[in-house]
Image (cartoon, rainbow, N blue to C red; front, side, top):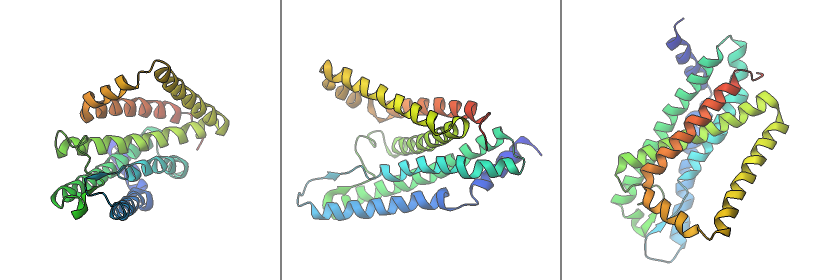
Length: 231
């Protein structure tokens, strides 16, 4: 069996359970839109109304990554699939599903532009800052963010499989403390204006590039940990 065939087999294995790939994220996507529109209809303001509900289906891939590692990985080892094959196949399945979700979000954004926010100025997927370079940049941002969420979930579950809950909590707690320390430094130096200005001038494409770099680092860490993880 060639390497490509092994990866394809893992992709098929991931798609055996259609709930995480892709129905649950798409269901979250639909409910997020419906809930946002109800809220927009309640708000009496006539101007444009923007929300962050489009993140909900993307963050759901965090749990898809956890599911891929905790449920599918043990079975893949019981049928003799190589760990590198499981890893690459899982990433390929996540990338394909991320592309589907990104496409759905772009279509949703186009509909919102054409209908002026469904006639009430309510926008869920169309955020001007994300769409500033066109639909393709919005698609890329949605895709990278979704894949990052999957890899983050996969990495967390891999740490759990390799070292257990204690180490996972220690790692997550350390990351939380590091983030809190950064926020404290920014606050003490009263540098929030500079931080906000940097985000405003960087643009969505540059931030998407940083997210892609973070995703690559997490993916590499996941594979290194996966090599010794217990099924």
